[in-house]
Length: 215
Ligand code: HEC
Image 1 (tube, helix red, strand yellow):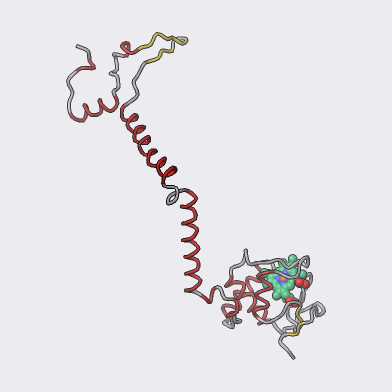
Image 2: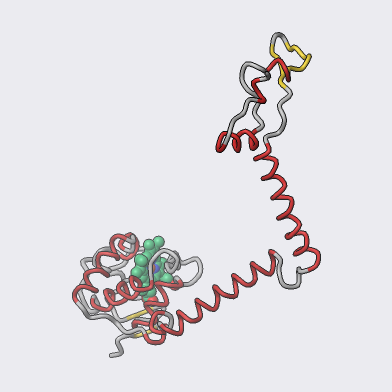
């Protein structure tokens, strides 16, 4: 009796039906005539488990073909994308509405807390502001930030705006809003305000026509 037709039951039987594997030792039955330098080829059937998976993907594709040709009004990649973007935008709007103080720059006030000022001072060094304004804010490439003459304004909102958006084009003061967080920019502006009237070692001559604080 051929080994392949032996009576087997249960799980083994199931595995057998899913793989249709040919028993070892009886390969001659399915050996092809080809002989490639001694390498031989067996004519195995496609394993049914694989084939069924393949049929399932074909069945699922019918669903998508239907969507593409008959239901693209309601369902398409573009639609799906647009829906996701709209949902995302709605979430952002809702967040803005729930946290107005984070987005409305007209509400910014100078911080006076010692911890915030200390953080601002630390940021002034770590974010390389000192390279152009010096550690005592006396100014070198950038203007002196301790006097009451300002090119772009010395009140907290103007400072915040300058730090966020940068100075006049080509002057060297870049926009920091993409690299320094909003809270940190407020801390920096507050630190600069706290340094008003201090006396730097080598102050740069006053620049700018805006006087703040007003005399
Ligand atoms: C590469 C040099 C450079 C660096 C770095 C730099 N600044 Fe400036 N900054 C300038 C220059 C130049 C100006 C003048 C801009 C103008 O004339 O429009 C300026 C202007 C300013 C002003 C406005 C001054 C005024 O008179 O209105 C503030 C405030 C300021 N910088 C803060 C900062 C802070 C805070 C940092 C660090 C996050 C920083 N700067 C980093 C060069 C620099």
